Image 1 (cartoon, helix red, strand yellow):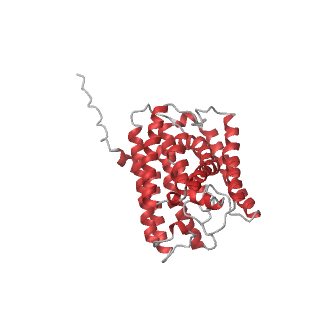
Image 2: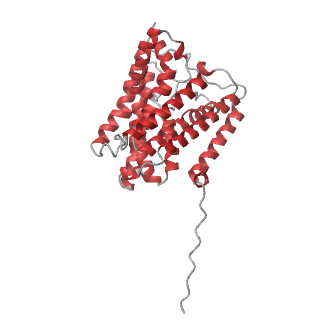
Image 3: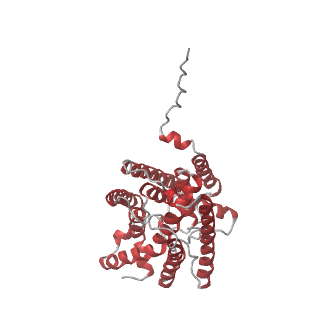
Length: 345
């Protein structure tokens, strides 16, 4: 007599937030973020050692609250992006990357190239008496009491455009298609909807939270300063980040890790690393160096994650350019800095 075997019980279905928190990379990221908060409270004392004229008020604890709220806003925005793209056909960016061994070699070489670009940018800028070249021009977001010349700003933009955008794109475009490099939209209408919604939300948040001085400028300063800021930052920050990280590294991160969450975290870390020479950082003592690294992470990790998430969800690296980079925050927030540098009256 045949006995019917009972089917093996299915594991209980867990909500996606619980599944996400089970990933080792997510657990590690949460622990590191908590540790970073603790380090600030332990090392900062009553004031931070940074030249932040645009954000000078408040205690270190106040700054921590602000940065944690920014992280929360980015996480909510990531949820909005997920909802906007939930009905799209599933994208597998890992398939746009080469097989694993080649992807690993390309990733390691590109990281080494990026480190070399940062070192050369430091040496070149200091040779001219300028601030070291990183992904942001001196005075970006926080302002600076240090003098920045127009020649420095133009050279910074040109250097970053060539090193992080033009050279990598020319090399990889000869080997991979525009689709493989996340340069072509698979859903233009859907991408446009994501761009508009994210741009509106982020612009409102930026205006409400940071009160940019752009709206205090006079008519001629706005007429000349807005397009100049847009072009300068597009060349010096936006396109370099787009090509180096979101066109090339992100598909390879996904191929190597097999995890979307880990890829998003690595995208945030890569974006943070390209800002290591920000003009406000201070590396003249171990304590200040630790605080500088912590606040680099606090400033850029979350924006790097949302840019990566936008790329993973749409397969189009251009989406983050228009939704969360070129206009907000840079053109919205940094126009006064460019107006001062170029002496626009």
